[in-house]
Image (cartoon, rainbow, N blue to C red; front, top):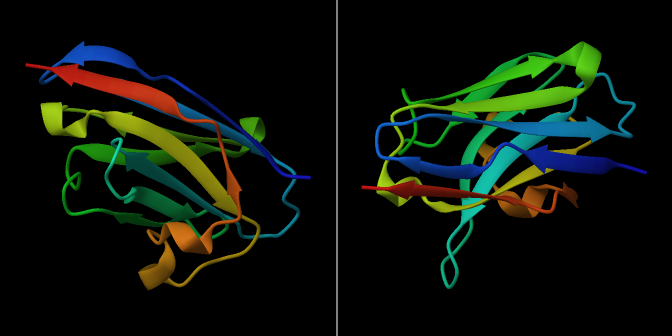
Length: 127
């Protein structure tokens, strides 16, 4: 059974930073996929960043490239999303997702490819 626990959301002013955490457990594959997605009510969910953990391959949405950075702590079974230079348009509910297999690079940011989802953590950026 796979479980995901998200944390780290909050309210910051534009230009500030937050670090989101996703602690995942239950996958036994050598390479797993972990992604961060965000959603504003009434809008489609957007893939933000994702990683094939076994190989370290990372992919970022163009809208966050250069500002957001993925990292992982294997000892803690945790993936982090460091978010810098936050903008008001980054405001959304952020969800961690996981799948117990490697994904092709062009599928890493496709939400329909993920099986397991966390409960979400709210990020609010004010100007």
